[in-house]
Image 1 (cartoon, rainbow, N blue to C red):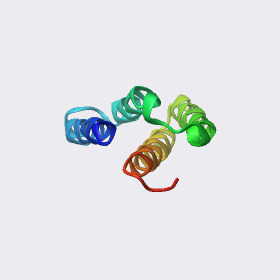
Image 2 (cartoon, rainbow, N blue to C red):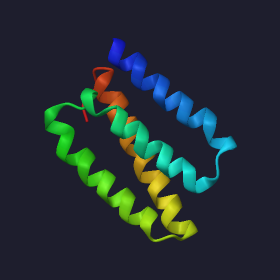
Image 3 (tube, rainbow, N blue to C red):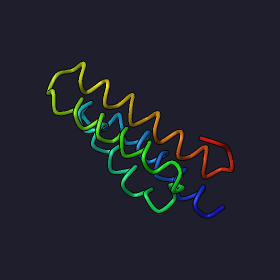
Image 4 (cartoon, rainbow, N blue to C red):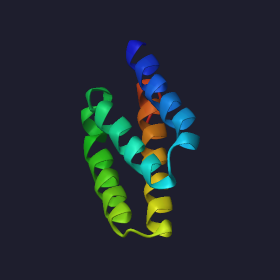
Length: 91
């Protein structure tokens, strides 16, 4: 339960802070949220999360608005999957 609350807090802070950050920073904030949640990621989901992070970093490295948007979409999807698993759901 503590893990779910902690992850929920990170996600909430990321989403609430997004209007105050530039769009590029939301990608970085989401990547940091995933990094902070590593202890909560089940071993069977670890590879999927790492692949997602690598894809997001590659999208962000493009330096385009489309790449940044793809990074944000990928990281948001990953955060939601982690949160669902930590709440007792399946990946």
